[in-house]
Length: 402
Image (cartoon, rainbow, N blue to C red):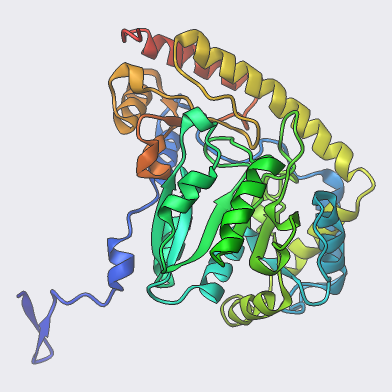
């Protein structure tokens, strides 16, 4: 025990006031590579999951105008009436029908929505099934509310889609929530309606609630997004999370949408009002403009088409190197296997950064089942993508990939 004297008192300096859960929580594996890449001279990155498009000018102008009008006070905790109405109308695009008054909550990004939904639903000791590979915040958010995360590893041979068998194998009498995210970060996988029908059968049979993160719903290639919440008997057991960061290029505005049964939304808002008060007023004005603009879908189409072209360049690039790639059908990530190199994900990423000055994200940052993969974002210009692929090809050429 370490002790010290201060003003005549003996103090135990070995004592920690930090939460045990927080102390044992690992730092984000993504953050480490961002920090290194940002400080390394001449480094290129395929690591950031953020659109390289600017927020549309008319959205920015709407926000500026609201500030000039002095609209800087708190809004309704749930979000402005106008924005909730626009959000409800927007979700109808995906076959979802929610009441603007009681079933919509405007959050500070979809990330806050994930946290609120879990805290509203999960008691200490409840098991939460988490489909992996997954966004880095899911497991920590489950642990922070006292839940027990149970991973469901997805497989490349199934196109990283969740199967009925994989789900059933993980269910116990403690299972309360299934947390899914399709289109998926980091794999780019999607779930089609028939895939979701099989999952619906299982969750209704076992009375499991579903949190579905659909932040990439607009970014699918060749196939339209399907939401599990739109299927029969799923409305009352689903919270849908969506937002503005990806399809609207509004990451820094921190705006999200949570939609679900009135009772669940009420309790999510109860937490939201005590911890956040309300989403930013200026950001809500910008979000309303984004949703109600007559050029909304046109602007999204432009981004989607550009991402699709980049996606094909990146998939072809990795396959030409001799690496195995499951073609992504959504989001803006490619998730190649680097197992043929004999390196771990972390070894591959560290060496690539040091030898070729290219930053990509190790697969195991998204779950242990993703060891042997790397995540590469194509939310970069074609020029940067091609330069990175050339450098990665040089790095990979030193390995026998047969």
